[in-house]
Length: 128
Image 1 (cartoon, one colour):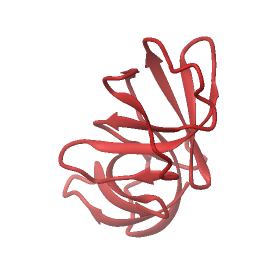
Image 2 (cartoon, rainbow, N blue to C red):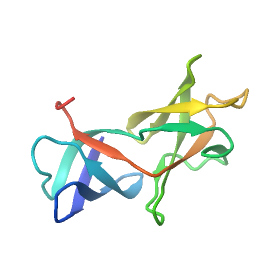
Image 3 (cartoon, rainbow, N blue to C red):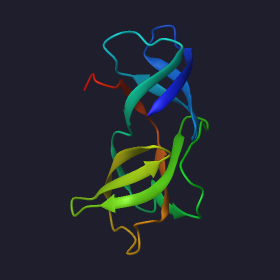
Image 4 (cartoon, rainbow, N blue to C red):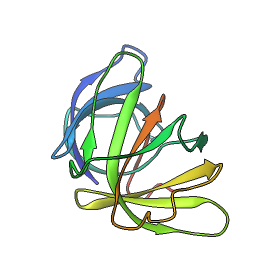
């Protein structure tokens, strides 16, 4: 995912970034300190999320990342869901995997899903 880093915390562990889909704060997991400006990252929303509590099907909005209080609602189109409960969301030009718990909606693929994520992790491309 191509992002633009607009702010860096004093200890260089958290960055504020923008993307075509919105803006948020993310934990920087790079081996080198982050730099202001455009960069390519792999990103994730760690943890397990419960359907109807942390995950909801929403009216179509496309891929969106919001900066809202302490949470970072992430909204994307469901493109895959496997028997282990891993949901793949398409957000702009990138995809993110989300571990889920509970019973997923029957008609999920192609639907817009919102994830209430408290954390977004960013790893510079090529460092995983």
